[in-house]
Image 1: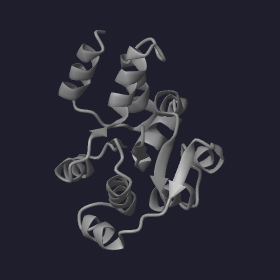
Image 2: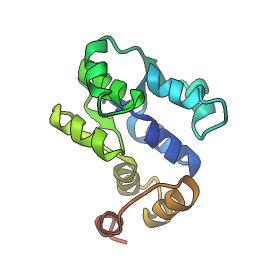
Image 3: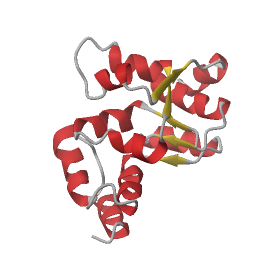
Image 4: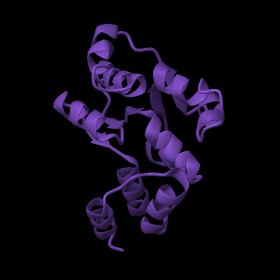
Length: 161
């Protein structure tokens, strides 16, 4: 399965020490150079910074269609724009992205998407984590992850918790 990942799923899962879930579920993920740069070139330590530089299952790829990136950057940051473009270029089976505008643009471009909450649901269904709700609570408390009460309840309900 070919998976492209934006910055947010990496930083959020790393912040709660659950980045390994991406490896367990997808084996490997691809990130564009802009996502790598967002994680490593900020001048201070961020969750996921060391991991993207050291884990061999996180692969950095260069995006070729810079015109498409520029078009997406009218509405998105560089990481999101390159992640969507890379997912299109390599015909990714899924793009992991959390930001609402990026998700909408990716869907409009015909991509299948998932976010951190979807990853947590998959992890629970596969027996990789016992419960989703404590992980969401950690995301909110430790990573500053924002989730509406309606979505929070929907995910907890889908997890049968």
